[in-house]
Length: 481
Image (cartoon, rainbow, N blue to C red; front, side):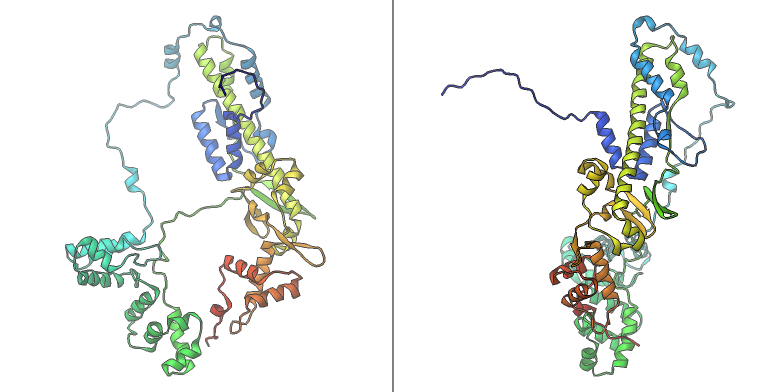
């Protein structure tokens, strides 16, 4: 069969994401802190934009949107095409000479600029703290090199992540030398750092306290498994001591630090500022945007007047026209973002009114489609609006995504969310007898009997793991007097 090329017309519909639409979608995804940063950046790079520094208590959508003067200026530029005949000569040199500074001029004096980066303080991390102690120690140069290698291979909890044999092989030094330096570092502050496991970490701290050879060391060195599962009677029997002796030893062991690097972290704290507030006014719950310190933008009156100047060169007018359109679109996009965020937040709180009254136990199952149908938006838009946005409620600050979850149906037809079930599990475990903790099946039975919620045992185990709660055999404890 012969192949041939043909040309034909085909009409198709295609969605094109213009730069303006991409900017609107980007603004929709930003949280309040990120939005504030973007607004300040745009105000810096776009001369037509300026911040309205007037005193204001409440920001309305009319304040966020472009003013009538801004739109009139944009219409005047758009409706009046510029031609060469509109351009007249203008003495820019003289204009700039007349626009002098209000401050007196001084003779130029060359000075050495300050290096501000070197003056900034940085939080001390574990590595720098250990290296400082290493260089103050009595170790020689070769031993310090081994020490630096050891410190460089500590994990986030302060444990040594490689074996001494690997260190000896990498540095081509005797193993005995590595072990000598390692033991030196293990008694640096914090004591127990560079240990290879939890047992060694605790034993180092016990030795540092001068308790070597006591019952405390014997329990940690020989009965870690029984200690982990709370089998204190078995420890007393194996060691040939009374329960009172074991309980006294446990008080010391519980005061040891299992994670030496706990007080040292290199993670930058993530500050959360809510985008929305929920307050109760009378009998009604009112949703408000957090716009108190959000910069308000407007079109610069100077550039509006400058556009009407017939002496302005064509290139300058075209530049201002381009920046003006970008500024108006940005202001309208911010206005639309705020409207959408408020609309979606009000819809979520209407669905979750029981949460506002009762707390987490009042959460209802909710999906994106429910809110999307309620506000007349697409599910993807609702997803963008709720991602990374936080709401301040009487029960704490929550991400808007928190209110979306599947759920269960009680025998009476009422629905509860998975977060509600988790809260019930947390409360049941908090009220249990620590000497006889509930099994997962027992928790499932209590949920069915007390809260009328039928949940499988494996589901209880899954939710318990997500809450970071240990199984029953590891929660069992003998009360220490």
